[in-house]
Image 1 (tube, rainbow, N blue to C red):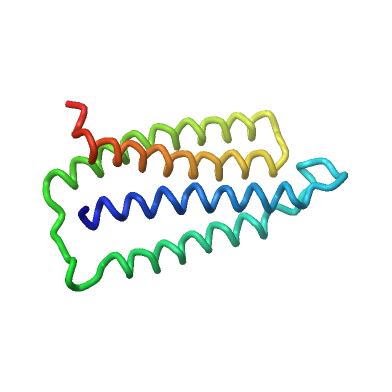
Image 2 (image 1 turned 180 degrees about the horizontal axis):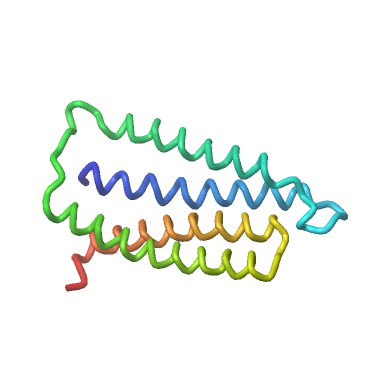
Length: 139
């Protein structure tokens, strides 16, 4: 398994775990108050920063000096394909957040739609890349 392939697995696990932890933290704070009144900002910031730090640490372990490989054309094409798929999901999420802003929804909903779009984008892009690594490019 190449470095790029292992990196995709790391990103998938971190995207799922990070967003899952965030949802768990927010839902644990709900209690009897309405969901938009929950203080979501610290949980969002901590999970985003935690995922970034975890990604850096995981990639440091993946880049062991004995296992350095150059990206080949296949890795580049798979990365481009996965990012193309993921960006489509991200654009859809951005449009949803824009619509929420236009109807003057609460900040809670706008921020959470944006965070969800980033998480789903990373998950979908990672899955598309893993499928391409396993079964080849669709063209």
